Length: 402
Image (cartoon, rainbow, N blue to C red):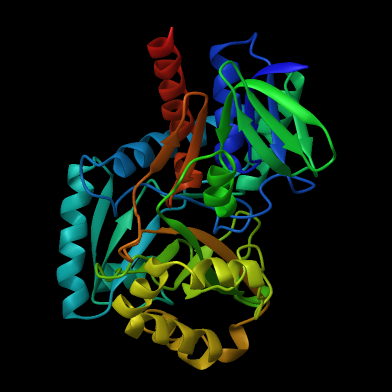
């Protein structure tokens, strides 16, 4: 059978894109291909489950716009389908004079991005969160929590009900683009033919792009986000999400306390270089992934540019005590005994040839293919408006070729 659209990837961006195509054209013949035996197996299913408000992103930027739209769209999607979510709010806590100054910059960004916040004094912080200490804080009211795996399951089921073919447990092995269609070979021996291909392959996005004949100049480098789950006896230690004020020179948000929609509370994550794009166990190594990094000049430039931060993160990964101290800056009552079940997620970080970390969206196109090569955090929050943008570009490309 020939399809109008073939979507590669069963994470939230791929599923949201297929859903948006179906919403605009009920007659579309869609096939979605996911190599795992289910959905949201990687970045989507291993993230912290936060519905972000967009306070960190530059005013007027695409990231800020998509995050604000995504926060509302995610909550509307969940409310319409009885998927549990909670708008619990987030406290960004400053613990010294430097962080208080950085906090003021975030307050300015929040105003420019139209985000409802409240500046909190140290005394008010103690009232809101007796177990948290700091010189001041920002209360970000719209921040929420959800299980993105439930959102993905709902999207997949609705796609099936609307006539899409949703395939799991099959991997793409070859992509060939012709004048009128794209041919996709699967590892089960089946060949799919589609008018358009949209690849939302996350941790494998650069490899899928090369498979499609493109020549990306970046490389995906995996960063492990390691975290610990507090014991049930500590599940009421906070009412809000608790974040440190981020260092603007670093790309990650720091170790924080996250309430999960299932009632758990986690400490973390950190951001330590990984050696396996899909290896969640500590110490995981995949030789092809290591070779991919080691043969890319941009990787070594990245290491040189961020060597101090990299060594610090490795130290925090090795030593639970060092890891804990980062959280004890604002939650001094935590002890090593509170660092329970460990876990990890892996972030697909696009690294450019000059060693810079790409923090914006990157799409690569041919006549009949669109590859989402970088969908930076908070891609889960922003997935529904990201999908709208992808389909807008597809429709524009079709109109231009008509």
